[in-house]
Length: 211
Ligand code: G6P
Ligand code: MG
Image 1 (spheres, helix red, strand yellow):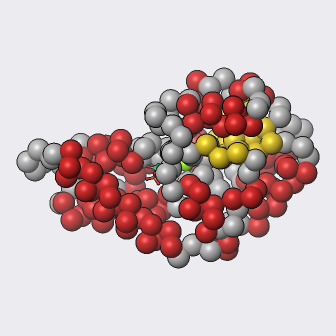
Image 2: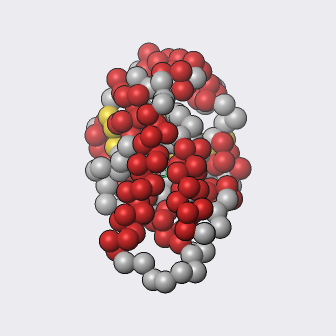
């Protein structure tokens, strides 16, 4: 194996809780029921698709495309306010040291995130320089479970898909990795998903993956 492609939210940083809080605020304002179980369905899914999942429980009058765009913008503003408070301390030493050690061992490292805020987040936590390539919500047309974001990451790195590991917390991300022909490593929520090739309990276990 030559490379690692990492999901961001729920793998490198725990911004998944901020996504939840921002969507929760919108849902509460609209009188829509929303909880953490529904939130798990939003992992790895684009902003627009996330909104549609939340609106499955909406019972009011039909919403125009303009109104939906407004709702997404409002959610993203709340989310970015929450991100604004992030600092390098929001990345654990375990994550930072593991990334550095994988690099030392000669692996190429890429980010593979559906988020359009990925670079902003990596700048806040001072981790932009840790990756050889960034594939994110700004360079894809289809989000996970479509493999596009990971295939682009492999292409940016100049590596073959079958020589890449993908590290993911989302079921949609594991499915995307498998469709891309990559090795899927599940962590967090995805560690309980049958489709993963390998499961890890903590990030540092990536160093012993090939033992
Ligand atoms: C990640 C998260 C999803 C989020 C998506 C888009 O994949 O896991 O929950 O919906 O990014 O994020 P964005 O920051 O562009 O709204
Ligand atoms: Mg994730």
